[in-house]
Image (cartoon, rainbow, N blue to C red):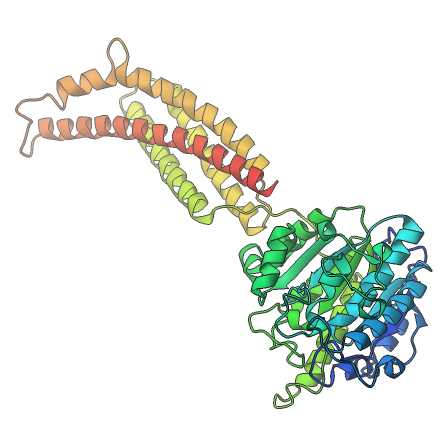
Length: 502
């Protein structure tokens, strides 16, 4: 029994792992990628999977080089290089993946260049339709979209076309040129999600846009974080769909995986790559995994480049196969709050609340000194302001914990708005009431005093004290009004955050 803590939804034998080791490099022009699976296996990957992760291994025990399928003469067709070889090899790969997948096993394919995904997706899609009556979803982790058709490709390398053939956007015109792909082998563009894109051809951008394909670039990952991107990607797929994960190591930044055919700077960290694999495994929907484009012969001028790329590949495979306790991460929805607006709101509300507390605390002290009764709204407004300060501190704690929910903000904001509105009405009555209002007395005895007293006399000190009290009343009203408006604002902000992330 494997050591994963996650119960599989679609595998009838989750303890079994079907291995397809593909030593093929014909989908591109750089030698060495056909040795990637051998290096991965010799590094101890399959031994770890069997002995440490607890899987029963089936399928390939050695790497298949498919030399019997590579013709001596393979001229370009529709601009594609090595078309007969790639078509024949991927057709056999489709059968090999199908043989493992139809038994209800998780299938791990080690490549090889990414053209082999034509076969892995075809075999996985066919087996899932027959066994479960369902379509598969595809999570394609790559720096490149690999969705060129033969007509849009500049290079003619088929490793840049597998998604187009797998989805039917590109079709073979003859049996030996991918004509063997039938409807049972296809995957839907509606269940296709890209993660990590950062080098997409103009023709591919047009294809993605016209077909409404979900794609998360490195910009999206930088903006939202890998956790939020995975939430959105998995939400797009849905909870009830088998997932085929196809991972090109060039999705990682070259500092983590330098030995690959088409490295592009500015990619995923290894931890982000591991998180993608772990998150997909954690759904319980994973039915197949590809790891491709490990080329130990490249980046030879970088010390330890091949070793680091192999280690990265092994880490990605482990992350997709087991959900270890040390990697358990709570899947909590994280909302994207406008930081500047939220910080400004908290600052203004904190200033308003503290000022009101200070003013009414001083008023209470004056009332006690004059041995006068304390109006109820003095302690009321102090209490409301103190509650507001506590609410702001709660928000800061939730932000620190990354648990700030719009519902909490909306409920708390509404309660405080009602309390502030009551206080504002009372202050307005005291300031501008029908008789004996604070404003009328201030206008009569303070602001209307002509001439205003000066000099070092008790009368001047008394006048200054009265003016300070009058100005404090005006400040309380002004900040009470600001507080009520800002509480309305935070409720609107919370609703917008909820609506944007829904």
